[in-house]
Image (tube, rainbow, N blue to C red):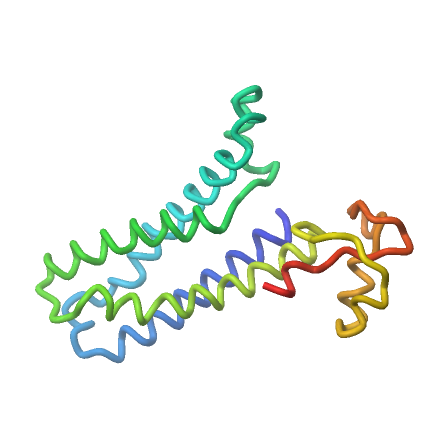
Length: 182
């Protein structure tokens, strides 16, 4: 279990709670009360699959030489672009079918408006997992370049080993915290 997985799950659950709250405010939700929850049950796992597929495709040469590694998700390797793409496509497909099946007087875009801003909140929360895992960082810079960061972020981005995790910068340098910029 990594911090990234904890934060991604926390962000996803918060997205579910907020989206469901917004959906329940619409009178049409009474016709299909579990629409958001069921969409989450379908879309979130498919988002994880999409994130893995995108990551594997981005490193395809290496994975072609080590195909069994594709299945080793515990070793890391997700790309948010693929997660959003496949999760959204599956979610849209599911919602479209449920609107038709239950005769909801709602548009797919209305449901999307209830969910997509919350997915951005989940992204922000998930990125803090990258921070605590000391991954997804940028170029090495001198400490003065990060003058605007809170001390705890700057200290954790220092090169070398911290909490048995390594950042490939000299101990006098700091990695750009891409998670924070995003």
